[in-house]
Amino acid sequence: MDTAGNLKTSSIELDLDRPNIEDYLPSGSSIQEPRGKLRLVLLDGLSGSCSGVTCLIFHLLLRRQLVPLLMVLVLAIGWIIFLSSYIPVHFLLKGHDKLRKKIERCLVELICMFFVASWTGVVKYHGPRPSIRPKQVFVSNHTSMIDFIILEQMTAFAVIMQKHPGWVGLLQSTILESVGCIWFNRAEAKDREIVAKKLRDHVQEADNNPLLIFPEGTCVNNHYTVMFKKGAFELDSTVCPIAIKYNKIFVDAFWNSRKQSFTKHLLQLMTSWAVVCDVWYLEPQNLRPGETAIEFAERVRDIISVRAGLKKVPWDGYLKYSRPSPKHRERKQQSFAESVLRCLQEK
Picture 1: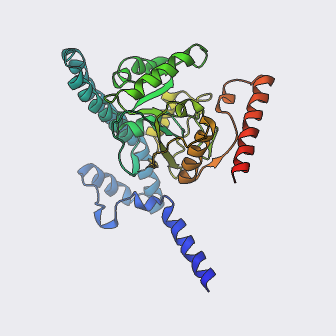
Picture 2: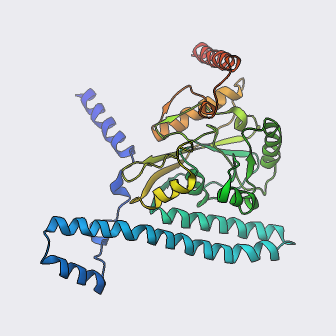
Picture 3: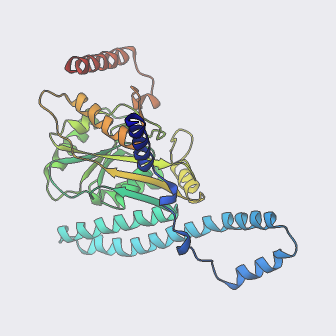
């Protein structure tokens, strides 16, 4: 009897811990019928000439055609408000850096809110909101570039990210640099040393925006987590894990950059019914005595994977971009084997 009771309790706890789409939707009492003469005229005209199923299909198709236009309008309004505020603040408050940075930080959060609204984003945040403190770095699993937007609408992070071409690159080199973002080119070996120094300098300043790193180094399909790069765990700073889990009930938020441009990815999200996800701000972690940066990274990856329900795999995210040399493969295999052996010896 005790065993059955425990199993039943565990089952209930697991069910309560899973994201439930009903939690995101309004209750039946709060849903109101849309009003408007146009809708009434359409329904009256259709009622005598089609069956209920046909009317439903027509209504859904009409909504599918109108939604993208509405979402584009929402985003356009957001950009108008943002640019009309950001440009004068950026140029007129040159001599008041502290005030200018504070306003720019709020405006970046605002435009990210409009982006999320344009996807009909429904995001649940769990845990305390990140604060600005020295010697701390936030790390998260990575599914799409929209991860940054979803996190940025709550806190103006300074993110480290691959430099992109086109309009995304323009935003990176102008607006996002105002919040302290750091860019790198994966093809440039010398960028690693430069970026590493920028990261160390950034986390030392108390007034800088919180640093956000996606240590997988690439977008993963939100079923797995690949190996974390150790750079974020060598900064002698407190590491604050963030877990992001998307619900695919309406759209798959994974961005495959090899098959789809980010513009097309955004349009896909804007024409979907909704982007639904959970974000967990997890307990900060520090390097333990005798623990290496690689072991620290794996421990944090464990925490994120368990919270988001993702499967850990021993893959290097950079394999997505290039084939490794035999020496690189041998070095990685040896490093992984030593890490596993060390963990087994500790147990």
